[in-house]
Image (cartoon, rainbow, N blue to C red; front, side, top):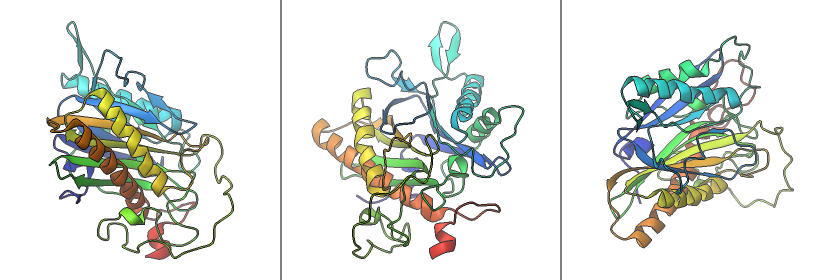
Length: 329
């Protein structure tokens, strides 16, 4: 497997991504936008998730496809970003047809960034407008680090951020990952610059430092955040034609990538989850072999995307955590 030309989730044909953030709010929104409704699923591993419309992403539900996926800061308030995206889609005539009405299907997930120093004393929820702004900004290219849903994100001790990565499979299918890293755990080993995800790095996409030198086992970590203050939210995507059950299996496999890149992960204090999305542009040639490789690629891409998010984060006035770049670059 090798990265696609952009090394972004938008290497998956039929996908664009939009970002918006508010420096005063110190938070933002990311929208994953398929050109046409795509089959989607979700897998939740964290103990404190915040979601919208995820119940319909089960194989036994009526609606099998979504019009967009939203990753947002803002804790529960950030779920209103989905409403902004849904209204923008409806204005374009997109959505699930019910009689003469269109109902856009926009599942979303949020992370907690309410204590990061931004101005949270709003009179009107700002995430609706951020959702619409992210939708309007959707395109094939986007920056990593302190942007979109990762703008105000934090990890155990370094700033978090927005990350993405992609891979081309021998079958010709493409897989990509997009993640907003706001974990309780750490993406780096101890207090050094080495990333847990180093064994899966492609080239020098997050510094090229390789694995950490051998170090003695550390004692069990103590949580650096309180209940509900963490969460890493992600989407993996592929151009392979998948059923909703197959998409769920890809989302489940992708959780391994989170565990490879963040230590600890999937804790009671995190709301870790992974969406999976299929644009359905390339049929599977062998369901067993292709499905096996899609899951492996999703996990690998997500691990790399998490490291890229932390590696690309940039310093901002009033930061409460250091950036990897300012600490180690």
